[in-house]
Image (tube, rainbow, N blue to C red; front, side, top):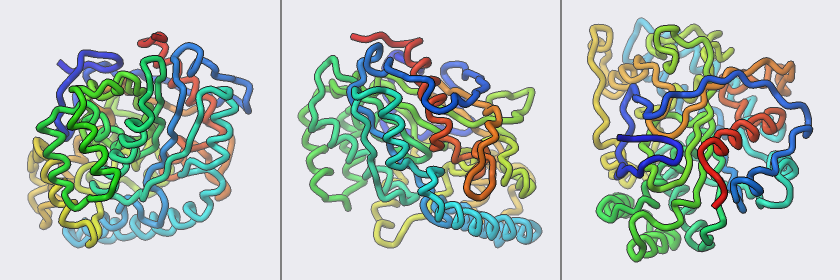
Length: 404
């Protein structure tokens, strides 16, 4: 049986999560109020949890369509003529608004900035050391796999001792790179070998280094027990292996959920009204949207991406083809819409914290409430919400872990 939060180790072997998930541990519902300024210090990361280093990793919101949202919507329009007008209208609006938001990234939303790191450091004190980690942020398997391998290389090179814990703090698809990392550190030899074989196009030094280090290491790798993970707004994609980390917490923006299924979000197919999407009526729209079938590969990595797709989507069950899905011409969009219909919000493993944000009255540079920015996805990177997020994550860890 899968458990979360310091639970019995599992053997995931890079399997994908299915839709909808069945969380191993009941999700936590929480209303969150912003903590003004720096009034709430958080020395417990080091004093109580023994964390010596924090890696803060951004997600994929960097361009006008970084997650392929509008591209998928336009394909829906091509596949379903009756939905073309609405789908194309939403796609155009997303492109325009995302382009404008991407231009305002220095204001903190959608990206972990140097100011975010500095505030994080001031809240925790000089220990742990807080570092920003960047990656290509492209929206496909190869990019996320490369981030996972880079993180593995960084952790394995440092050779942390038993009393030094590491916190990975990531937004959006950075969390899915963390999921791949847990499978790497779980170090099931046959599964890890299949991962590197599928990634045969990746011959950079860090890939070869990690492959050799894991091949010579125990199962799981000893460093796994030192890794704590806080994932914000991570779409439900790759499976997690809890023997590849010590603790795992998901923070998910969740609003107006179905009363008979409170851990689900409102189904994304048939499409919502545009204003419901724009105003994040049901919470983080991007987290619910960016599931399997929404990747956008590039010609340079297409071969490797296809090989990884076969590995990483193995075991992913196709959705039931209800009547309205059978009229969709594209098989890919047919599956995607079927998965969207499940309204999946939670991850199978770890502690899912479903957060309803109390309005803070703060606005982005575009005049949008920060809780609703980036279609409900940007609150995770907000400076204003960092103290509350840090306290929330720390409190969750303190419930299940004590210092060695």
